[in-house]
Length: 198
Image (cartoon, rainbow, N blue to C red; front, side, top):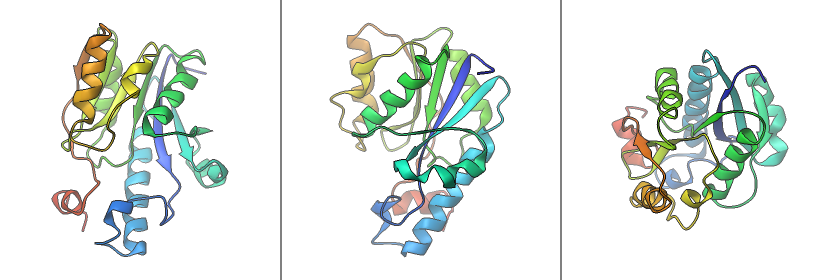
C-alpha cells in the first residue's frame, strides 16, 4: 500500500455470456465483445496511473485472474451476490485493508476521466458518500470513507430508480451525499448510438 486513497474498477471477463447481454438482439457476439473490451481497456488505461491513488481491478468470474494480470494493477475477485453485494464487498475489502477513502467505478462510461476520480476523492473530505450519476437513473461511481451497507441493500438495480433509492437510504441513515457530473452509461443500443460507438 503506497497511498491512502484506492480506486476499484469493477470488471467482467470479456465473454459473450457475461457482457453487454442487453445488446444481444442488436449486435453480434463479436460486436458485443469488441465493444465491451474497448470500454474496459479504455477505462483501465485512463485510470490506472492516477497520482496518489492505488488502483485495483475487482474481476468476475473468479477464474479469470490471468486475463486481468496484463493490466498490472492490484487484483481481487468479486464476491458472489447481486451488484449491490459485490460493490459493498469490494469497498469493504479496501476500507478494511488500511485505505482511508475508496472510490468504485464501472467500465461502461466512455467519458470518465482521472480528473473526475480525483474530484470524487476530494469531495469525500467533506461528505460521507459521493455518487457519479448516470443518465439512465443509475450511477457509475460511488465513493466512501466508512462502510455504509444500507445504500447497497433493497435497491432496484439497473432501473431509473437506482440512484434515487440509494440517496434515500443514505439520507434516512443521516449521511451526507454529493453528486459528481452526470455521464452516459453504455447499456442499451440507444446508448451505444448516442456515444458514437457504432
